[in-house]
Length: 313
Image 1: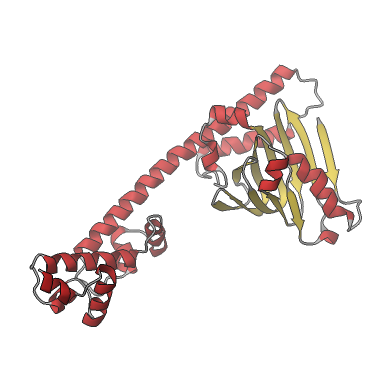
Image 2 (image 1 turned 90 degrees about the vertical axis):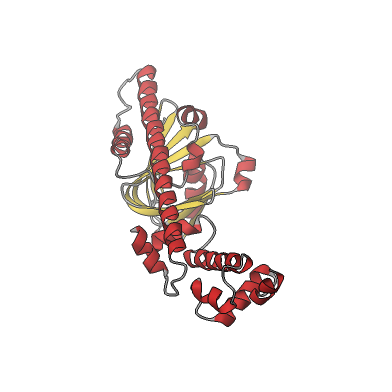
């Protein structure tokens, strides 16, 4: 199957409807939102290779959106893979989102809502039967709206093979078995790339956990320092402030809130065990330089004042 579409010869009024009904519906039923219908010159071509379909598209900026209503009307058991040869986009699905630039590869799933805003000078789209990809990469759904790691050699191999598939001349009388074998090899490579992505994520998660552990250890050792800051913590564990904040955010907290909580917990324990007898000493020992503020926060968290705790001890 070889298909080719263009909006060039259509009127301004016809272009959005044509693009939505012919092109978007062909890939997977979805809506397209076009900023400038009058200047929207979009081109799309597609061909089948075995059970895969590979398309080439170029267009101005538009937004492609698949919603729950589309899925109710048209359950579609396919994944789509995008290789942005040149241009830009932004893909969101399953609570994840990523920018897409030239050379980037991203995966998305027709069984879940997605939004893909894109302005492709040239993008290759691969439509993949769901069962075939899940056979090779059972956890593929976890890697939608995630850019394939560009520094991995296998990502480069996958990019090259997709481009070769787009260039493949199917006018030659290739036996069906040859086309199926080529499609299978492409899917094997995609499955391997997803496995590499999984391994990289595990290493990244291990690194993040180590940074978090080191940061918390540094904080514990410096609770008495009223000048402890995110900058000092980040410098101590050799990451940027932004990275440190993001790692703490994965645990639902900021670095300084963690400092504040640990200071209150340490002060509470010292007062409860009688290791510190005066509220002022507890406040200053654990980095609070304002006793009134310390007492207010203490009561807010524990329901009684530091003096009340001393009276109970």
